[in-house]
Length: 121
Image 1: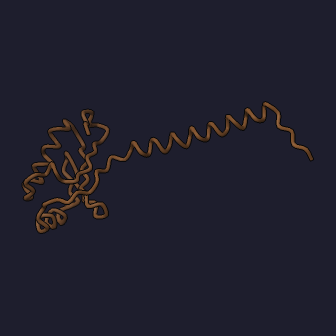
Image 2: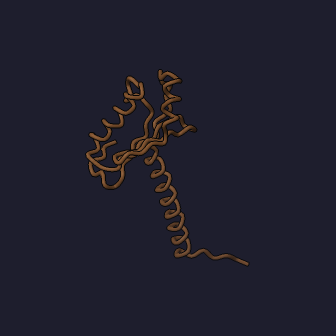
């Protein structure tokens, strides 16, 4: 049995392979862009202070919530309403009140709800 490959069939196969590659690169590229997780850092935080903070989490106010991710040793903060920078300062002040002298150096994943229009991260 002899197979006959016409130009139309070869062209269709070429387009199918090209479309498959485009879809593959689209999804792998988008996945790389979504990675906003900072690398865990060695912090100079007193383990007792850190344990006290972890015991208070998860916590939620009307303006923000704070959780702790044990697996990645990071904090997650979600801001519910703007202005974003003002609420971010509130979160950092909360960490300062807990005994963290420089909360800006903490590994924190910042996020905001869709109602916060001035989110900048």
